[in-house]
Image 1: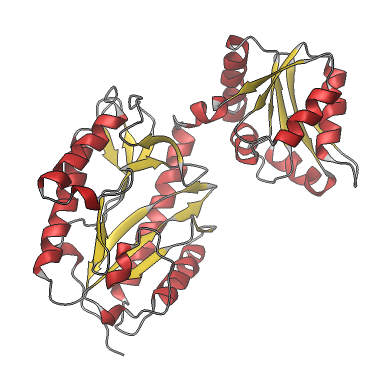
Image 2: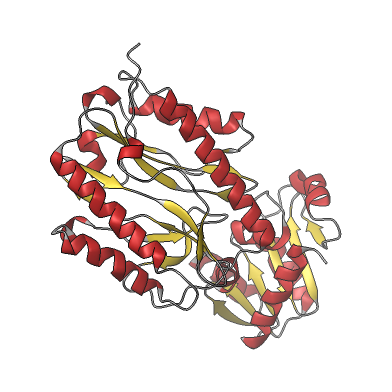
Length: 367
């Protein structure tokens, strides 16, 4: 039995526990997780009596390669996916059906309700996402690969950093090198922010040059086998300002304290509280203005979220970022981010790039 069949089996049990006959999966990422099919414009029916992938002719051969043995209905060119789904669902004669409330539009739901007059519709919220929070061994291997590629690229970028490089040039070079190492590209649009622009947690790379400030923040990740890494480092490129040293050490202390506390059973809100307390004790609490971290996987932001209002325990198999940050408008900011695997008795840093301030001092090339 493949890992995808096992995932569908676990989902089928959740659907049965919810008192339904089937779930119509319409989130394309969830379809990928449950089948291995990497295309889009497809739905998956997970039913007690069996599963059915609804797709179109563009993907027929691809589905045969990626999902051997999976029952599939290929719609005709010009047929609307939702119309085909209604037809097949009526044929299945389901007494009850769950839909993914987080991904289906109101219009699509109304269409199903009008067409499936003999089927009771219900809403599922996050059942597949619940399964996705715990990574299996194959997913963890892919995440390790995504981290490895991201780190190799960063080491190369760091060694070639020059004073006249712009934020945009660095971002483009990250993408190029990730692809050259076998990745599918960046796992999200990289953030490269020089000096004062580092005060923007989601800064868009622009024309600012590295040599214009003593530091540059780089937030990047690699996409490999469909899975995404997410890392952040701040590189120091000239004499370290006193204020910067205090901010950097505070952020690193907050991250270190949070990581040391991570193990199964600890509430994610408690991890966030631990990191936030370190920043607050340094008098910078109001400058840490985002959550501590998030899950990573097929999406760059997945459950669980590490935040003060997220009351769920950490579990073995979760892979999350830990990324405290402190930002001062007009001056800049510091964020340090690593990818963490929760293990049976603690946690493991999947990323191994140096984290201390001294280790992130670089000498710029002047050509």
